[in-house]
Image 1 (cartoon, rainbow, N blue to C red):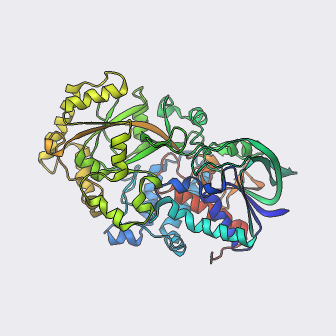
Image 2 (cartoon, rainbow, N blue to C red):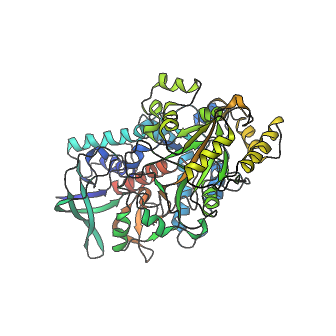
Image 3 (tube, rainbow, N blue to C red):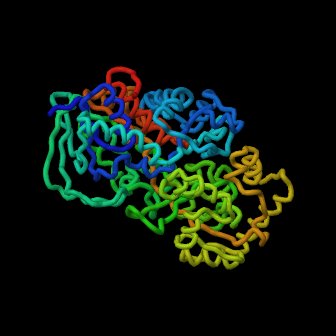
Amino acid sequence: MKYDVAIVGAGLAGLVAACELIDTKKRVLLVDQEPENSMGGQAFWSFGGIFLVNSPEQKRLGIKDSKELAWQDWLGTAGFDRLEDEDAWAYKWARAYVDFAAGEKYAWLKSFGIKFFPVVGWAERGGSLAGGHGNSVPRFHIVWGTGPGIVKPFADKVKKAIKEGFVDFKPRHRVDEFIQKGDKIAGISGTILAESFAQRGEQSSRLGIGAFSYEADAVIVASGGIGANVDLVRKNWPARLGAPPKNMVCGVPAYVDGRMLEITEHVGGRIVNRDRMWHYTEGLKNWDPIWPNHGIRILPGPSSLWFDAEGNRFGTPNFPGFDTLSTLEAIQKTGYDYSWFILTEKIIEKEFALSGSEQNPDLTNRSIPQLLKRILPGPPAPIQAFKNHGEDFVIANDLKQLVDGMNKLAGNDLLDFIKIKEQILARDREMDNKFTKDVQVNAIYGARNYIGDKIVRVAKPHKMLDTKNWPLIAVRLNILTRKTLGGLQTNLDGAVIGMDGLPVPGLFAAGEVSGFGGGGVHGYRALEGTFVGGCLFSGRQVGRYLAGASHSHN
């Protein structure tokens, strides 16, 4: 059978594209190398944060936002500097995405039954000037239901279309090459993998038991990035971020392997901005792993003190939650691939959240009773579990004991107790007034001017060495692989651009494999809430183009 469109990858971008095609009764083939239970891909495991501009939730919290402010933040964050070449389409995608986020995105998501947690988060706060990196205002909207909540309406629609015969879904089908007829991409072929009983997220086998070949008028590559391919991450690591880390934990399942990038490049697709990537600096080794080398990211509030491996406190803008890549650069230039938080029990119970749907059962399960437990004393249950079982935590009722424990955990004696104590004492002296020269302390007071942060996110300022705020806690932070910011260059219809600057006939891409649009919609840095959102938007764009018209999904 010949299909109208074949989609490689059943993650969020592929599902959204399929939903648009379903509406015009196109015959769609959807293939994925993973088992059927992995539909939704990485998005399922996400916290479900969505970048929205001037939303009703923002307005209810007194946040004044605008498309102009969001675009200012995007440009200051992206730092596009290859506009004549690799950023040519990325810039156009960025403009279109901010228009979408400030326009119909909210109503479109609501039409699928998607709802949001009422408190808007403030991710990537920046820590520089108004025109620099970061969000000027809170824009991180958490989906009620987290990642599974954002995946479900699109997956349900595709599953309905499968039953009705408009979509053929073939899991355990790994694409190895494209079918070409002349200069046109005319289908896909590859290996049928053995049935796998791996649970969602677990590594599945790559044993081949057969072959397949299917023709299609168009092929959409929606296969994700390179985050689990550590060798490829190191190969593309930019010199500006220092040497690649020797040790990293993995923030994505093993199937995020980057295979389709090379396969698509082989037929003429152009990969741009290979050196742009997004890896987190607050990674924990998961004490209860699902995939190999499984890491979990801390989503920190602004109060923890951040030290390098030798016990030097980081300066502006390298504070928790402010500038991910600046902090990554600072860490790598120390010559070590880890760093430390030092904090109090008062801070951890209010300011620590963990990224991932499985680490937020109250939000994921949409349970108000569970959610209300967050206001009780003590950290949320998933955080407490990491305190109890995670190898990266040191807890003590004495600073000397804490520093000794940190050195023991690191297997060295790099940290000097007196040096650490003097830095914490200096910070604590700045807590006697609500005005101070310490930029991080000022940022804490500033954050609490936002009602959302004051209520649920930022601890009341206090002295760390005051015993009433103890125990003291240290957390070893690992580099955690996550996102590919570059990728296949695409025009605004999602068509893959070739080396000659023209679309490769019949070949399209969406999601992370395309740098979330254009080969790098984020530029060098991201504002957060834009990865899931980028999959939604790029999948929608290519799906609507191939469907032949703008239309309602109903």
